[in-house]
Length: 179
Image 1 (cartoon, rainbow, N blue to C red):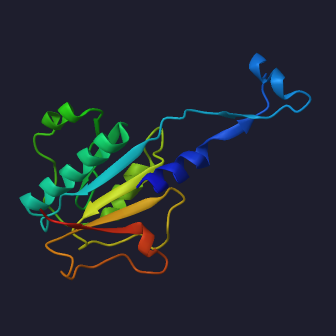
Image 2 (cartoon, helix red, strand yellow):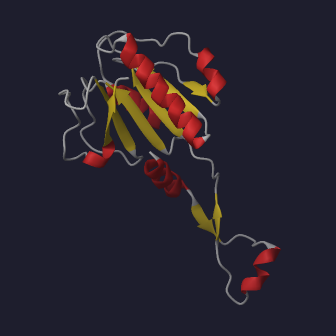
């Protein structure tokens, strides 16, 4: 996940030759550019809330969201999704887990709708984490923004569908064993 965040963050930062800091006088006669842009990474998590996701699977998905929140100390935008994406929920600290009473969903499954909603967020995320049981359609082509699929399983040996490879790679799939 940290590699995906770094890749996404690196895609939106740019170098600038705007007026340099006075402290850069030590580099004279070379005038190096500086990075410009917001340096805080943004992560969106799409959670599968379809009928095939049991309460244990959804609880495991939420635990993964809060593990990302605690590990990276950055706000996470949570998007519940079954056949359509629902209103995003932003969680910024571990105490925000009490904001999440019940996630909308329970119908069919289409994570492409959730990924599309995540990529349409303003400002756009640097990476998207999709937490699902794998019984969904996958985007036919990789997105410009790094997308990681967290496939929740009963055990490592359990057979669950994964995104087609190619165009996706093994690096974009993360098996998550149900606790």
